Image (cartoon, rainbow, N blue to C red):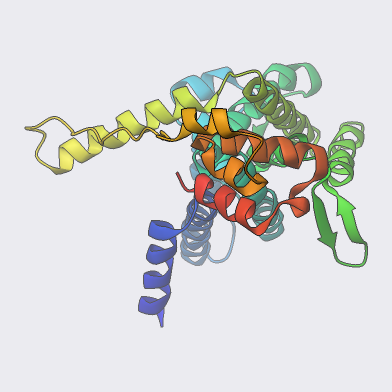
Length: 313
């Protein structure tokens, strides 16, 4: 049974989209930490040992800057680290629901950079405000800031996208996202997880900024993807012996040989031929503009299929 589960996980990670991969990483981290907790609890007569808290803080971001400087990896690990079951459950559900929308509309290759940058901004906002709002040292963990970046990016990209909620029916995305942001604003006034709500709002702000910059022609995911590709190439070089340079893949350029011809015949053909005569980027821009004006559900089956295939690139 366990072998079958492991094979399923490997297959999903290898062939699934980026949302699936991020969820698998979060769940794997959670399982490892919980197994460690069980081992330590059994070894200490069921009394929670101090060593577990020490190990946990090894992955958390702290209001103490010295902790972060001596543990620089926490700026990334904190957004994959969860302790409570419901904490990771809700984060992964929201990531799955809204991440699929972002992947379909903005492209699968932008999901991970948005997640990482949203988590970084949320963590930075927490660090800036923690010393002003809390006494003593506090710690932050969880993917909530990164997930809120994806949630708000989805709502900003297609505010009229319809989601069907249990008991509530069909609701436009802008109202769902607005409600989630409002709950975090209200949560800042309570004494329960105030730092977490601040980090959520930091991530939410970046999600809005990401889409706004993308519409202005500034793709904030590009430098992140370039860095990730270099890291990947570096490790590939190590596994191959490091004696040869990593080979760059061929660049794919989408060109339509009939584009000039279509310019002269435009107006005599039907809408379908005009659509097919567009370049890949022109088709994608046209679909995104249509989603912005009338929503995803008004796309034709051909347009939905094109958008799905484009998100895989």
